[in-house]
Amino acid sequence: MAGNRESSSGTVAGENCTPRARGGRDGWRQMTSDGRHLVGVDVGGTKILALVVTGAGEVVARHKAATQSGAPMAEQIATAIDGALADAGLSVDDIAGIGVAMPGSVDSATGYLVTVPNLEVDDLRLVDTLRARYPVPVEVGNDVNLGTLAECWLGAGQNAHTVVGMFVGTGIGGGVVIDGRLRTGPEDLGGEIGHMVLMVDGPECGCGNLGCFEALASRTAMERDIRAAIEGGRESSVAHYAGDDERIKSGALADALDDGDEVVTEVMTRAAHYLAQGMLTIRHLLDPDMIILGGGVAEACGDFLLPKIEAEVRADRMKGSRDTMRVALSELADDAVALGAAALVDATITDRPVYEMGAARAAAVEEEAESVDYPAIDGVAFGSVTIGGESLEHDIHIRADGSVRKRKKKWARRDYGTSHVLGPRELKRALKGDPELLIIGVGFDRMVRLADEGAEMLRERGVRWKMLPTPNAARAWNEAEGPKALVLHVTC
Ligand SMILES: [Zn+2]
Image (tube, rainbow, N blue to C red; front, side):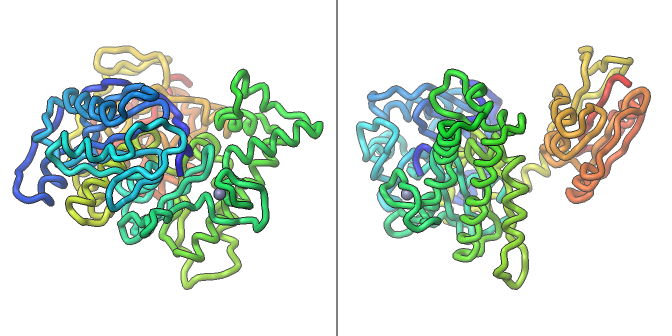
């Protein structure tokens, strides 16, 4: 399970928010879900990320530091925890518990580390040191398992009860949540889906066995097959995109796919086939509500992989009583594992399934949506929009949380060859935070239109929308009630 994650984008170190008012203290259940905060720590090969979160999953402070190879690990983790608490203006008395995610296998009964393949750890029993230092429950778990748990709490798997996470990176990591609880098994070998044998006597895996899933469909396997094709005389643009990197990273694979590179398209089409077959095996074993595809490769190339995988899973010849299993991309990116660590300690304290944590989250989101301060538009002119006295000379999105963002036209250009069409890839971003109303300013000359599949997506998600000439859209925005979002085209 270790080493399967690749971080996609940086987060701001020491980012600081004001903590919300804290609630009552009667009973553990109340403390974590309604009142006190949780700390989640993600220990990786290059960085240690500590988050302070509310019981509803809202991040109130984030502390990030580089991992010091060889230095005492418990000390480094404590420094990150203390840093995040200081950023939040909280003390250890204000938190209900601490969860720590490690990139290795963990004895879930004791919290002791068993193996940590890609990280130098001086003390496999570091949980004891942390428990001695902090007067609250401290739990340690495997990072990929916890990434899956977090997706069930706050991401793609919300409300689903049985979920399998499949994280494709250097290897293939997995996590299994059954009826809202992480299932690791008596030997903590459960969820090692990367080592399901998918091809008997197939290529050798890093674990020593033959034909494992990750020996067929991980980024490492893709890279092996691409290199073999190039050595066999095929041409590929992937070397150009990989640049000076020793490895062919996920971003280079995505660029080569965008380019229509034949070798990469071929290899990744085959990998999608293997991923789908792995999912079918999981489906027939566990019948989960959902399989979540994450990790560096899925984050970079999900748009390519997912439709192929979905089609193959739907074509399953062995029929169930219904056809309800969903396949979805992960949603939480860089914070996922630290959030999952917080969920782990909550689950230990409250003994409740993760979908109940999710229900607390949904209630909090609803409450917050009612209290969002949406920025008003002061005015629009051809080529610009003025918000809060600031003139912006580009198209904008305003999301349901009230944040103003520059509209990225690349999605529209890539999919439709023009920035005048709104399709699902752009709308997915505009709809973050689940608005009930989307206002679309179609330009001064009404050039912008909604793609059919964009309209379908809005319908599926239950979002009402209004398409108005840009000046009217600005007025409608100021008058509309939230939760709402805006896409505004400021030229033709
Ligand atoms: Zn293996």
